[in-house]
Amino acid sequence: MDNSHSQFGGQSKIRWLIEKTSEDWVNLAISNPMEILLDHAHCERKAAGVALQLMFRYVSEPGLSAVLSPLAREELEHFERVLSILNSRGRKLEKLVSPPYGAILAKNIRKDEPRRMLDSFLVAGLIEARSHERMTLLSIHSPDLELRNLYSDLLKSEARHFGIYWRLADERFDRNTLTSRLEELAKVESDALVEMHQEPRMHS
Amino acid sequence: MDNSHSQFGGQSKIRWLIEKTSEDWVNLAISNPMEILLDHAHCERKAAGVALQLMFRYVSEPGLSAVLSPLAREELEHFERVLSILNSRGRKLEKLVSPPYGAILAKNIRKDEPRRMLDSFLVAGLIEARSHERMTLLSIHSPDLELRNLYSDLLKSEARHFGIYWRLADERFDRNTLTSRLEELAKVESDALVEMHQEPRMHS
Image 1 (cartoon, rainbow over the protein chains, first blue to last red):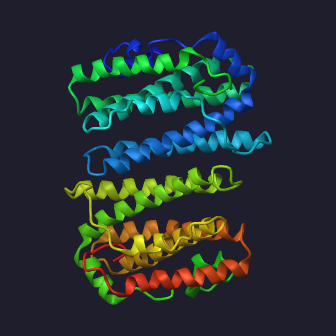
Image 2: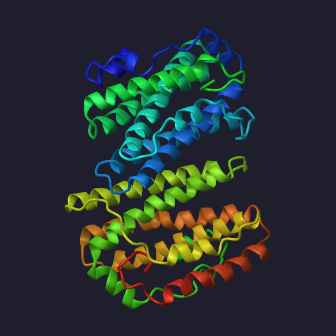
Image 3: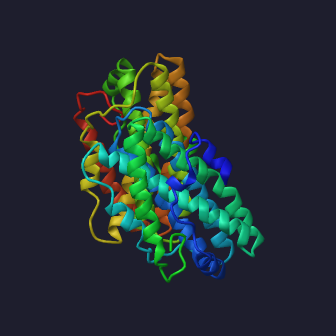
């Protein structure tokens, strides 16, 4: 995991993820692989949706679409890969109740520009960073070889993705504003996971 | 163009496009290649947005995401390709006033399910069919070799895309309901183009 952080010029990992994922989550997740897989499919679909939403909202922002469009494509590719494993195991895509995580983070995106843009990049980056951390755990601890391989393949892109959101923010905001806001949002992100959601989810 | 229609089991082209594009549009378009290219980038971005929106709205619909996700990825690939030609010619992505075409079609999507689903597939298919027809014209009449090649490459996917929307509808609705509604919407689509929008757009 350390390699993935070198692309932030030595920026410490603590800035993205204040608290590590608990063992309890790992146990919940590996005991419910199909539900985690289904939730994961939704996460990839939603991540593509976020990238596209940003492309629509900031349509004239130079250099934004050129990086978010390939990112959205890659999330969709992951979605298709997870969906095909689900299907091969006799499951279909179906709705799942979401844990409060995404809504808590979304509520903390400020409404006025350019702060809304900054917060949107940082929240998207935080979600990618947490997904990366959790996929790493699943790629090690899942008892299922096909799933270990899946997570191990996908987590490489997740690392690139939070790098992309970091750069989008870093190119547009001064470093002090950026890091102090990231610290605040990283606290919100970790706090949202302290009380574990009882349903097995990628972001329980 | 005839090959692209064989996948509809001999369904006549007239059902999709009631009126052919006028020579006036071709002249307007080839006299304003950069504006058409810019509008085209937006069309590809919006087409990806439509596919993703349908995936979100009908998240549990069996077999829908598995075909719309690759379609959305392909639209994004086209978006990136058009964007890179724009950039190589010194232009950036910027907002453009849309012609009334898209809004007129959207207004004709009925609000109650399952009719909303049927209309959404047919409208998306009609837009792809018109894009296919116009890109074919540009691939022949554009005086610019790079653009002729671009349109000629992209139009193959557009034909596949309206085939996908046709099948999504055909798998879920009876053929009579489908063809009679397509006839109505195809009339709306052609009527929306009778009075040519004065600005050069893909769907002026």
